Image: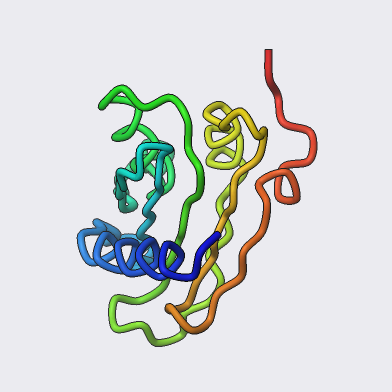
Length: 137
């Protein structure tokens, strides 16, 4: 994946993180994904007092893309931590998000998952590395 696209996705994920609603964990997450057309969809985590009703940033971005008619994802970038960027760590997607991402793979059968602290400090992994035995029908 081109460095310009990675940087774009990370920057968009950082913007999305600023919209997160995380009054319980204070851990804000932003995600940005790109689809084959080149369009970018973003999402943030939205917590709820009934914690099971919380939605992760990754799934928010996927659901936004799907609601706009997209059925394939090429890559996703995820940033997490306090809004000021302190104590940032690599924010790996949870198991539920990994499974949801696997539902919308491109024909190549895999996507890049970029976990980032910022545009200079990130790792790119394949979803198949993070979820080697996904459930697919």
